[in-house]
Image (cartoon, rainbow, N blue to C red; front, top):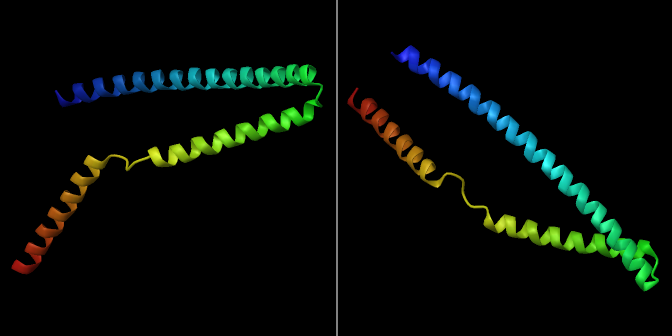
Length: 112
């Protein structure tokens, strides 16, 4: 009975891993394509602005890069604030378990 359940868990785990790998591949591919599209969009926008304003394209590209850096730093600051402690309930339970084990070990030591 236990062996059958372990076999089922093994099969389902393998399928879940394969599904997860496929999702990661598709997500990475989408991220690469989105990045490429953004690069092309910015290059086109820089060119269009340079033609329209008669300003050298390198200055517009530097300004666009600066704007992107400012936005990136804002996002990093937001990400730093948004990140909380991971698994707070699990950590609390593990802390209780460690305290209980330590208490049990102290009781064994004091009774000997």
